[in-house]
Structures are given as structure tokens and as C-alpha cells.
Image (cartoon, rainbow, N blue to C red; front, top):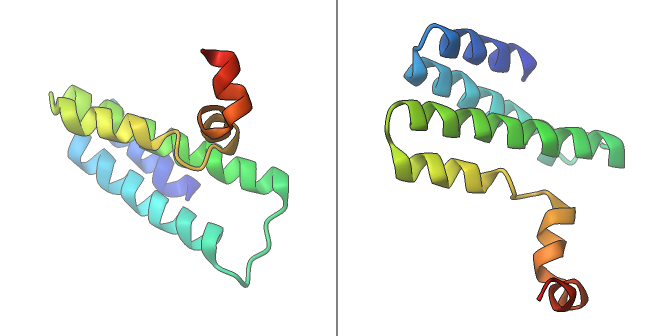
Length: 102
């Protein structure tokens, strides 16, 4: 996962945004394999690391789309950053917290 992320970052620095996104996609595929393979047990801390890395990869993809002036895809990828972030998701779904936010 980290190897693909680093390759994507290198491509991004060279302004090769399409190539960067391919590397980020490969990293996301590998990450999801690790995250959802039932034979691999992740503790809470490791799961949090997976969520943060997943969010980072989607934000990197969002930035690539932004650089390519693909505004909707950029926004869609940015929204993907929140998926799996249990604390932030609960903030907007827990009725008690929603009542406090209002």
C-alpha cells in the first residue's frame, strides 16, 4: 500500500496526475484487501490507521482531479474521505449529537 502511495506521490510531483491516480487506486485496492480479509485480524489502532490511510488516498485523488479541473470528481473523492471515519459519521447520525449541533 505504502509503495503505491509513494509512487503516486512521485507521479503527482511530476504533474502526471493520471498516473498518480492509478497508483492511488492500486493502493486503495491493496488496502481494502487487508481491511476486509477475514483471515487478517486488525486491532482498533490498526483499523484507525487503515481509515486514515484510506482517507489520505482519496484526498490525494481529489487533488489530482482538481488539478485536471474535474470539479465533480474532485468533490466526490473528497467526500469519500469521510466514509469509514466512524467518529465523524456518528457525529451526523447520532440523534443526541445532531440535536446539540442544531
